[in-house]
Length: 246
Image 1 (tube, rainbow, N blue to C red):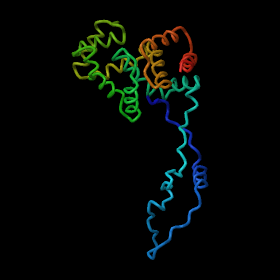
Image 2: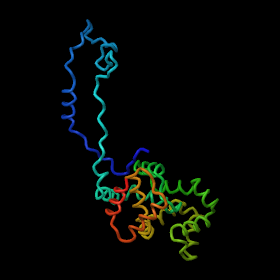
Image 3: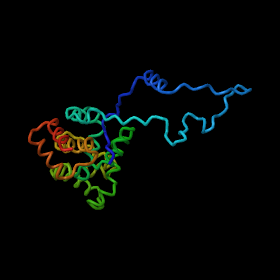
Image 4: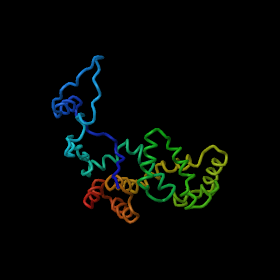
């Protein structure tokens, strides 16, 4: 599988003048095409084109350069720094938290890439959360949920069922009155301080697997590394362990 990255898409590019001079120097000198009576240059046919292959079948053009692998992909501190950066936390982590809040699982790579791209492209997180609320996976996992059942499910997923009846009724009334959509309600919980703290290590492990391995973490892998982080080990130590396991 192609390795994807949700890190900021900053790449190192050669200076424009340097690249232009290098390209010019690599080309053999060419004779100017003859000019006709109207002052225009006739179109070259394929045989005389400098881009045409030689008669022996060998393409004279140089092969394309090998892709440059960013140095941070092998640097535990750099990977941890990227995942914990403000930009990453504002664009990628909230989408990952929605997976844990709605489905009680980490994000799959294809879904995460899809929704992060939408969020980076300007789609509000509330709209993404509303799409999750109406997804087929919700119905397959939990069945058809009316507003009361949806509130109960959210409280179970996010707070393990904790909460008082007065708060439960308040959320049900907000949904039934149209004052708040299901996505808005879920986002209020998933982006709340309590849930962010409770799922911080799960999100870190999920996103590190996406960055390093280009896939989601299996449940046993997720549990193992979350326990490692819960024990007080640093994000750098965790990422070093993943890099060593590649």
